[in-house]
Length: 458
Ligand SMILES: [Zn+2]
Image (cartoon, rainbow, N blue to C red):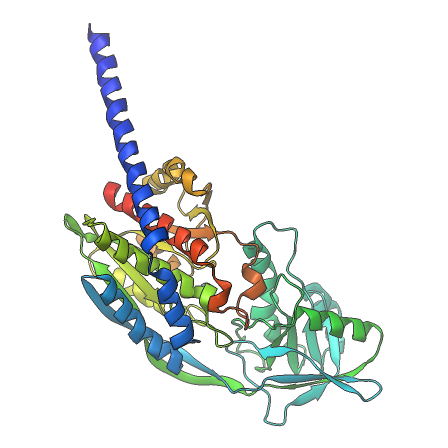
């Protein structure tokens, strides 16, 4: 008898669990369909790319983007939209980065280069020196006696063996970020770094670098992959006499900028905050479409869908357009600093900053020690109908990672990564490179996951 009753209770639980799952799956379907049919992300992205354009923090485009992002979130129905002040570095590039390969026979040929972000430029006259090619830092160490007075050329390609291209980016990225000072230590006068690009093409890809204050701040440029191969081939055949570089750029102190926050206040637990965001700033060479206009407009979509479908969240939901991810992450740091002091509980944060391509899954942090992270993984079957099958451990994003200290569960959207580094940080990162369909499917599953986190909370 007793046993029977126990079985009946278990069956009841299974039924109620089954209907909850059924309800969740219906809601997810409604949410994703709403974005696919009525999504505003693509048109918001068009505006951000075509009307605002490049949005490096501290630049006029950066200022305009703050104003426009705030307007968009108001129009999408946020209860409150506000700016969160932060200080950002102001790095300025004058037009016309140039380089020439000067051949042994006296002929010159232009090289496709671009100054790296945060780097100091050459003099107005430019600089000319012979070039020493190294594959990696080990080779630099072996050849250090030969470096003085020369331009060091790091020709380290992204490793195609990595299936996730972001791993190859992380691996090759150290030459861009630290290569200048490593070479300056041995007396180099400039560095040329092979672009962090997965395609052979003519576009140099910029990106942040930083200096070790112990050594001279020498100019640092990226060279297109095609021209890295060209330069390398010419050096091997001893056809090169020197390379000429002119970049007029540099730091101009710090200026005030802002994160833009759009909020829907929670009905039951307003002090529990769910954050979803992307970064509003972009590099200056293009429109910052995939990096990270897409993450911004996808995050704003959470506000639109909740309003459109009449979902009143229990917890406070914030779409945050972070400032200065590209060359300082001042916005992400400021957001976490304020979060650490305002007495609220930052239970969950999601970032989309890996391109607006077809979503494949989510990377989830704290997978071993957090109940919430475990639960996110248990929702995986609900996402299968949308082609979301990768729930991997290790996730987050540069802007939300500073929240880790507050125990926030961090999640990053993982889109297909194969084409991201064809365009990333180059002149190719324009609105036309984004598919409306892929962008909206990504936004849909992001809203779906935020819906579940809000519903189930802790
Ligand atoms: Zn980015």
